[in-house]
Image (cartoon, rainbow, N blue to C red; front, side):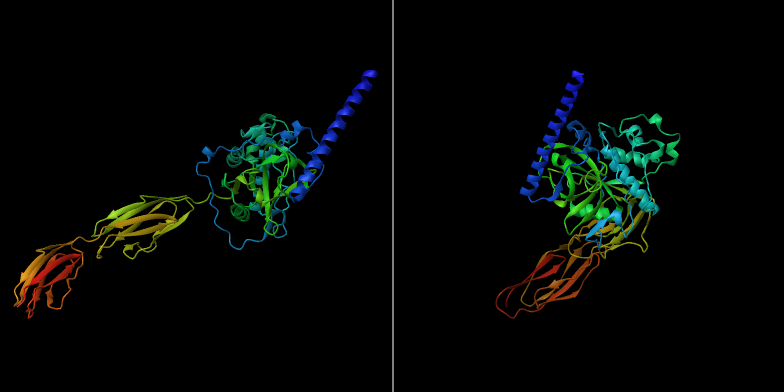
Length: 473
């Protein structure tokens, strides 16, 4: 009996110490919120009252390896006419976000964030708002190979959702343990929901604009953040880090934004006893090296984005011009058009297509006085055309005349298509014949010099100078 009483006293004492410690921690968080003029409220939550080792299980994300992204960064074009706020829980009066789940005492935030994104993806794609879409996180934990209750990777989980997918929750209800894939229902792959494609919106340099644009274009986004002690006590408002040490990495689902008050709306996986019914708002300012909100943000796409490549990417031509072909490599459903930015580069009408193909072009003879550069644009890719300018030579390069004047000739050598015109710089020299294109002979006359002094002038052809000297009377 004495041992029982002693044991109960010990338990109550430990509970008292724990409660006192939490109360002290909460007071410090509230003081830090006030001191830093933060816009959120801290209070007791279903997570803040948990033992420290259980809290740690909530934040066991393994962040992707930057070396493994393989160019999977989606460049979202600016979306015109963005609203000041967007919430996929109330998008044109319809809800495309499923219920908040609870990962429990298992480091499976990575599975809940990606599964939540899959569920919203299905609601949007099938246009079935408010449907209780509920896919099996346990399949992802037990069968996906992307992680376990000790943590996991959102990129590898996304690969599994693309290649295999998830069945309904009833196939393998969540157990908050690693489980075994053999416990899943038979032939679950045949009824699995899958994404068509996924891509990073941002890796380690996220921006508010990139996330807002992707939210508007693609729907809820998987993202990551670093969690500090104060976050466990978030009750409401716009979270910003104020107090505590780093507890671990966390994966969550961004479902909206608010430009007026500068925050994102986010779905967590800690049940409805935490935050605003399981959701939280986080300030745009938390896209920073400390909290790292928005790092490794992923969008789920209903089709693979069009990626283009061209070969070769440039070509040089002689002065006479010529023709060439560009090979275009692209997905089968992606269209393209070839456009020239220079009048001397000609592309046949209707040059373009869908899927892989070729673009033909021709380059006119360069009749100018120097080399030139132009481009052909195909789906944002640039093909550069360079062409040398005409080269001219004259022979002879000079002649002397007596005061009485006379006539003369000189030869011009150049390419067949190269134009030229002889230009004298003095009125006493008259060109009587000779011009391009092609090689030819310039004929000219020199009038009598009635002055006493010697005079000099030139005839210029294609940048080459023929010198004329005439004695005085």
